[in-house]
Length: 80
Image 1 (cartoon, one colour):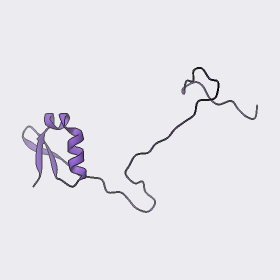
Image 2 (cartoon, rainbow, N blue to C red; image 1 turned 180 degrees about the horizontal axis):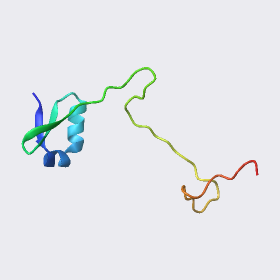
Image 3 (tube, rainbow, N blue to C red; image 1 turned 45 degrees about the vertical axis):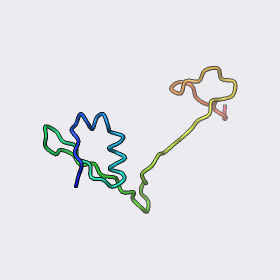
Image 4 (spheres, rainbow, N blue to C red; image 1 turned 90 degrees about the horizontal axis):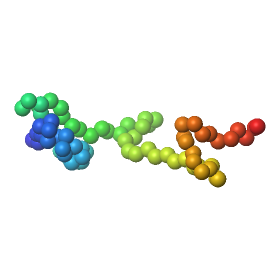
């Protein structure tokens, strides 16, 4: 049996609802008292696709730089 939450309840408890849906519980969000959306976990694709999870990246500020603006400052051209 699915648990139901109104849009307002879902807005306040979104992280909890995501956790519940990811653990396999049926979560339904209602709008104006009627079921509108059901949350369910995304299944990871195997073999060449992307798996669910967190993708992280990092970058390093050049040595001696007092301020480094990612939008306008770039690494020096090594060929120059």
